[in-house]
Each structure stands twice: as C-alpha cells, then as structure tokens.
Image (tube, rainbow, N blue to C red):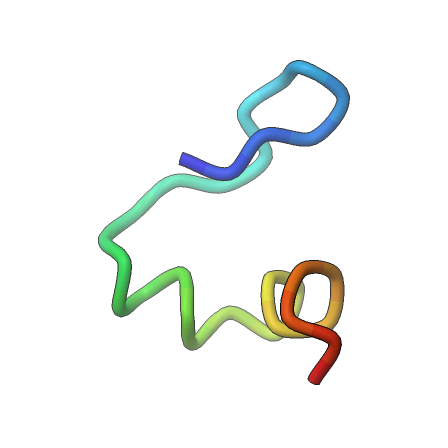
Length: 30
C-alpha cells in the first residue's frame, strides 16, 4: 500500500508500485 494523507492512494506488489510513474516521481524523485 502507498498512503497519502492517511488514505490508501495505491496498492499492489512491490514491483508494480516501483513501475508506477506516480510513485517514482513523488517518492523516489525520478
């Protein structure tokens, strides 16, 4: 799960979340 402001924003396996553009930009700075 990925939480934003206390709410579940995304869910999935680790590999799927790593491929998400939103996760990469917001959390990894890529």
